[in-house]
Length: 277
Image 1: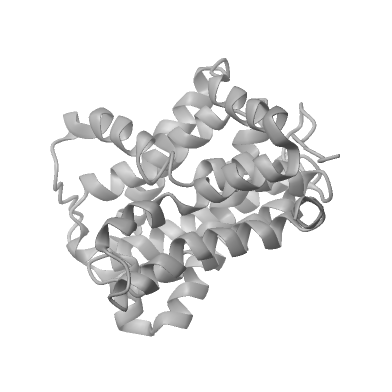
Image 2 (image 1 turned 90 degrees about the vertical axis):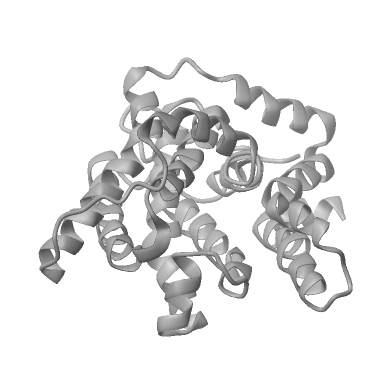
């Protein structure tokens, strides 16, 4: 088992995360499992990351993973990027939607702005930060970077991360994913999510990760910030702004690759790599 995980970390991550995620969701939908298992499914990526790290590298690997949660000295600029960049991209998406649809520029807040930081802390400890990042950036990314350059590693992580979201298109009340699936179908929506959100977002994650000495703390914050903006802004009419958001994120990811280079996605630091013995 440990040899398989060491040799095929990407396959291992995807299969275990899907079993704990989509597998449990399917069991709930079939009435075989109680709904409380949604909580396990929500944390499936991180649970997979912790389980596979323990299998592949034991206690030493787990200590190294959790040590990265304590890396906070990254500079004000990287903290600002982690907290605010995705929100600015989303606001840009709202602006693009207003321009191309001819509608009035409006930001419908579902929550007051002062709720941003309480929501950020909440999302940090729930499915957005703690629920996923011990898997994608804690386990998988550094092991991919031991084999491939930072860009290829990001493409692999982003693809698997996108496909892992399949249950979101099957569960009602999960906008904008569910709304997109209703309009264009599950497969096109899942491909759109993967190509234009999780892959470019994975590139930005890797850029942040490699430039902050592999800080999982910043990765948690970066992921949590996206969920905060999704909660703050009224989710009833998100499809057009979300398409603008996807376009902006994709363009910024391309610029990051061109400026930082595909090898490390950093001009100053080597990519963070873990090679299990």
